[in-house]
Image (cartoon, rainbow, N blue to C red; front, side, top):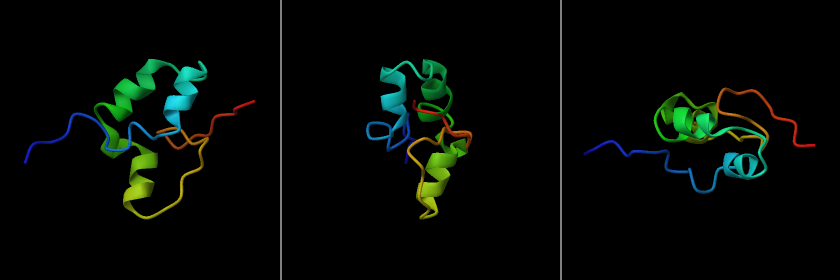
Length: 66
């Protein structure tokens, strides 16, 4: 089985909203969502059955949406 080329939750991840609003740059998506999603804290939490704050970035830090 081949490895997918992006995170399976890429289309529903709150990070897409941050991108559209200019809160984060495209490098977050490239570095986590499209390549190293196993290193993403959001991904790890979902896999382990844990809840993610919508404000949590892939490195586990929180973004202020104000």
